[in-house]
Length: 266
Ligand SMILES: NC(=O)c1ccc[n+]([C@@H]2O[C@H](COP(=O)([O-])OP(=O)(O)OC[C@H]3O[C@@H](n4cnc5c(N)ncnc54)[C@H](OP(=O)(O)O)[C@@H]3O)[C@@H](O)[C@H]2O)c1
Image (cartoon, rainbow, N blue to C red; front, side, top):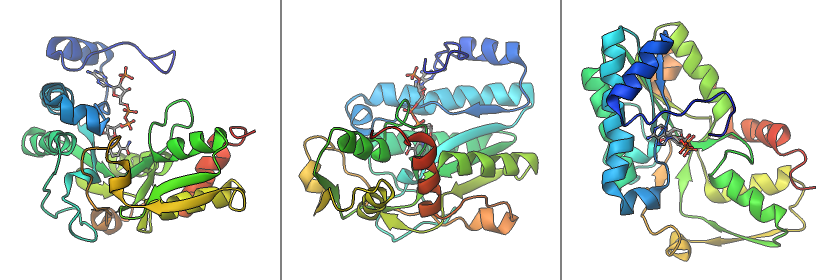
């Protein structure tokens, strides 16, 4: 539990989930949790399925029973990555257990939920040192440890997605009852290499730390599950609805670093 106000719930347990939600009586059910460690998911596929798909089926039944909308967070990782970027309606073609489990969750929600928002995020950045387990925090940790050389992949493209912008945008969709499936990602397609380069610039470390570009094979022991080459999302559905609160990723990254990491490196 990473916040004092949180209660414990294992949402794989249908009865426990239902009792919890019914006891609270919410206006919406926002199903956020998942196993997000891609290597764990690949080597623990049943646990991955139960947590990332079966629990979403639970959420769908509960939301339907209470007559409330279900909000489900999916991922750009459901695409194969062979195209440069993906529209909301492009056919998913997941390449690993995590992506497959998330796609099956999407599919179940779209086919069975009476009212739903499937919000598909790109490379999430948010939460800060205490919660972020992803790319930004990994780089920041290395910088804190005093590294003078970062090894960063040059062969992966994507769209960063700042959690604050994502939440603001999802709120607009919910408020306006614009239900359906939406890609929600910051403006500007980029790469891991460019994000790391920008991070060095924002932290004033460009002169002190070098970046050595490597391909994904460099990390094959740690990250042995293949990732899509491109996880770039277009936000056509969002733009069409006129509620896109996503900023350019560089602007959002700047705010993220200022708000969450101002003292981190000192
Ligand atoms: N991070 C990204 O780049 C990214 C991108 C696109 C979409 N997403 C999606 O966004 C959502 C949030 O991701 P995140 O990065 O915040 O994930 P995270 O940091 O790994 O957090 C996942 C959360 O799920 C909870 N959880 C796992 N199993 C559970 C269970 N059986 N019952 C109840 N809660 C359970 C975990 O609780 P404990 O801490 O108690 O284990 C944890 O709080 C996920 O659905 C993920 O697939 C993430």
